[in-house]
Image 1 (cartoon, rainbow, N blue to C red):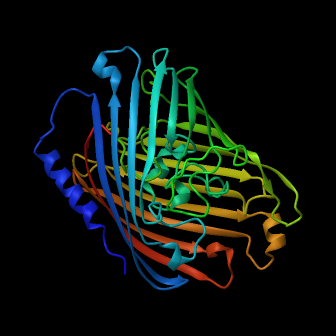
Image 2: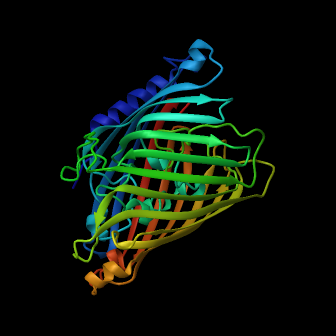
Image 3: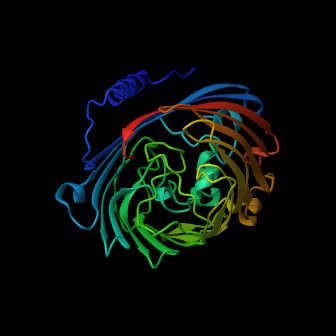
Length: 414
């Protein structure tokens, strides 16, 4: 049975002590930092490939330097560094699912996950970012979905499967550039051009950077229409990632919005039918989120989110994916707790089924979760998941699994 990464645990506890005692306390916002240790004991109760226990953990160490604060520049200029460590352990080995029940599941490795510089212009209406970049920190993000543990509620399953080694998302990012433009308080446009193959396909622990014409580029684009805004819209990077509160700021914007986006790989992909033909791999998606506030407090609400995406079925197993969920946010103390129910289905394409006729049409994951702040620095989140037709393989029984996400966080600003 895998054991916790005690080096990371001790480092986190040390930083917690430092943070609690304000060793580095200062008013200057030039330096923002964060350390989050996430552990996820996971038990597959029945079904799947095997009944049993697995331990997963994740360490995020981040630092952001705001040079505009140091030099009193009018426009924001910042540099961001993000170290990522994973101990290993795979819930998939027990459950046999395709959509990945745990969004901190990753090969055992330490890596530089992000390293970028960002410059804003025209009163923050235009933002340019260059460097190692997590695409899913800003693209295909619906904020209510970030509370859930299953990966498909953070980024669409048909998007996550794309590419030779996935797109530039957790746990391996690629280098590139992102341009973001706020046309007004309600319309925001984003486009990113990234290396088409993050890391090394043959070495999962590698975060090699290799830019070549053969590997091509991934072009991502998204337009967001905000149907509700609170005051002047300020262009900022979306710090809340698909892994709730991991290494980023803890606030979650509660704006109603609709996303329309897509992705395109410039390098050719071979057809799944073995014909030798090739073409361009692409996909599009549509998603939205809606908030209903049931008190005068901003942290008490009911939120709904839904998303549908399609991909070119000639090159991908899933031709489409559909997800939706409901989140209830309440306040039992100074912090906010969340209760959520969500469902996600990935649908095999006709081309994949023609080559694999024994497979079923879809896999469906259902998740029930509750996150509550036990302490300001400690969040506990019991989680229950049930998967129907795991990996669309008829010989695998539907798994039922439970877990407890434990997150210890320290830091300032992010």
